[in-house]
Image (cartoon, rainbow, N blue to C red; front, top):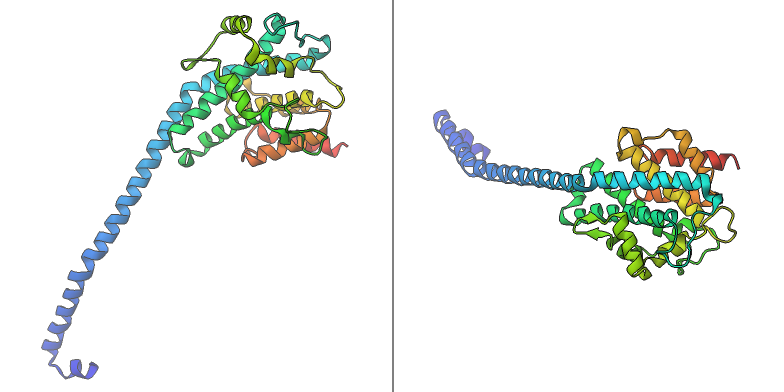
Amino acid sequence: MGNAWSSLPVPVASAAVSAVVALIVAVVTPSLKYGFDKRFHRRKLDIEYTYEQQKELRNRIALYKGLLLETGGAMRNRLWNFLEHEGHGWLRMRGSCAESGYYMRSFAYRMLCLVAACRLIERQALFVDSIVAAKSDRRFLEAMKLNIAVWTSADLYAGLPYDGGRNNDHFFRDHLSDIADTLYQGEQLVSFTEFSRCLAEDDHKYRIVFTFLNGATRGEGGRFRFDRLVAVQLVLLATLNRFGYAYQKVPQHQFNTVAQECEHPVILANLCASIREFGLEKEEGFRYILSAANTIASGL
């Protein structure tokens, strides 16, 4: 073939090469352009899809984030109060749920409002592709799941003599969700007055919450619900530190103070494992829990 080209006169060979090149360009260039345009268009659609989904999720979160911060703040304040005054015996039932005092009823109400708010936000993520969520929004959703799991996970007691098949010191996830969902009125939460009225009419569905809280105190021996309330407080503090208003943030030493209330250090270790499982270990506030747990563990 090389000899055939070399035997041609230079003008003829040059024209032949030009013709071949032109033919190749005419055939190959459209194919390359088509492939490039196709990839570019697909990439553009992916970017637009991701942006729209992220925008939609952020808008849905924004609808209820304020509610979460308010209910979380109310529950956090009640837990501070409880840790300071649990020895006074205010957290006790008196006959039926409706007959219990304000402290008991408002404790149950604030607890269920918090879970209900987390559930409202969690359900919004079902309507969008949260896999492509922005990192901050994805972490927020994971924090919502952890705020529910800290009430329901039997793994919090791993390493302790506790039967996870019985819900003495934890709640079954679906059961707690069903109870919290009764506080919805449309997309709003019922007032404390309305909650008290529901208790007076039929307290059966709420009795398990009151039973869990009834008489919770330090040093119960064989029961671990006090430590669960400590874990709830730590997760709430971390959530508000990371996602809350400036006035809701607290320094590391307050995490240490709450963590020191935990009577079984293995529960702190299990809580830290849950934080890592949800991918929150590097987030502000949640890092403080890991630090507090490490401080307590190193002092044993």
